[in-house]
Length: 252
Image (cartoon, rainbow, N blue to C red):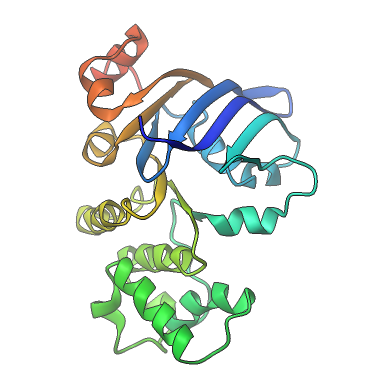
């Protein structure tokens, strides 16, 4: 296993009285793609959103344990949550472009963090759209509303927007589930291109997608961590009978 960038220790999450995540301890390697898999309702998205403290936005949530990123616990008193979320950008299931132009969607984050209009901002916009595989399709229409883009293009725009604030980690919550197969493949290809430079944590309910993309796999079942291993070992030599059953399609 590669050197971990994220270390999760004894993480528990409750929504009211419902114990969603149960004493999760796992390391997430630096760089590459880590897939979080498991049947619906097993806590995949909650685990993902706990990494940058978005899970806390749900009413009645209680969290205990540690999530250390580069050695710093994101739950420590005095932590700047805005900075944590800047370092760990989230791409959601449904594309959520801002109600502004294509250009301003990408420029929004850098402007908030003090980047002024000018050549530098133009270069950032172009670089991020290139990295998201969208530049060639939109370079002549940057001032058009982002809402005019197709759903697949909007999702790549959201990826570019996340990259614009220079995150260390990309959190992807089933980012292809609302897309047609061609658009989904476009997102997959961009993530494969980006994994050499970013730690990518990817929630998916599609085992075929996890096989295609993942370097490392975390398998959750009913809020518990069942198994975590490098992808090839996980799919060919599962240790736990529940893992084997899930891979073979016996449930989920």
